[in-house]
Amino acid sequence: MGIERGGNSEYEEHEPSLEEKTAKWEETLKPLLAEDPCVLKLSGKYISNDDVKIICDYQGLAKVRALDLSDNQISDDVLLTIFGSENLVQIEELFLGINFLTGQGLIDIAGSNEIKLENLKKLVVSDNRLTDLSVAEFMRSKNFPNLESLDIGWNEVGNETAKALGEVSAFASLQCLEMERGYIEIEALKEMVQGSLMDQLQELDLSANKLKDEGVQVLALASKWKSLKALRLSQNMFGDDGAKALGESVSLAGLTQLYIGRNYFGAEGAQAIYESKTITGLKTLVLKEGVESDPGLVNYSRPELLRPDDPNSI
Image (tube, rainbow, N blue to C red):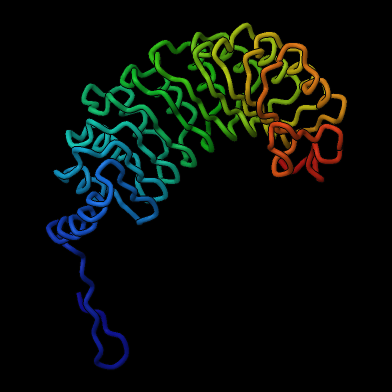
């Protein structure tokens, strides 16, 4: 199509054909795979759904174990293409954070009988626009028995997901669950912590979920967490009562890492954790993010560092 720009100038718009796009992607992929045939990093390349289809059809992916497609323009329509690709059956780590996923694609792969990525161990879908219902549907799926690590943070994860986590029995290998900046309310949290999954988790990230004192008390009193080693509760708006509940928790006795910066507790709550008679194996205790993270240096003696200057800036 000709477009006139001043006088007799004319510019032609050219949409590359599928053959041209395929050839271009072959030029891109060959040197990347020659450098490291096991890791393919394609983040931040403005990859669209059409590009994904070409990549998935590429025959040189046999050795790739980690595929990074984060920070692109991938939408729900192409998730089944990725998870159903014969060329990606060996993938163990898949990064899809910061894309245009809204949830239908997650529902599709949760219920599909054509999933090929059965060896998947790590999945990152954080910072998309996934609905709570779609994540809950994914958690009820039996398609990913080998998944060990799941990052669903920075989405609309809330009560339905929490309830599903309380029911789930299919994710027998899941050890690490990241749910930063979610929307879980207290009643759904109570259901979540009763699930058998809680006893197999080794790492749990609930940062920025606004759990407040009551929510932290629910976590601390739950008769679960047999395997839990790392717990992240930063930015959850809890004060001394929540901190004391953590310090007195028997079920959290196995923790070796605890991150609780940017909350509202003062020296009393911090001391309750630091001098805990039950959580005695901590190697990393972070009471103020960005100040001290050395396991031998905690800052409970400086109350002004235990909370943000503006306590409402959550």
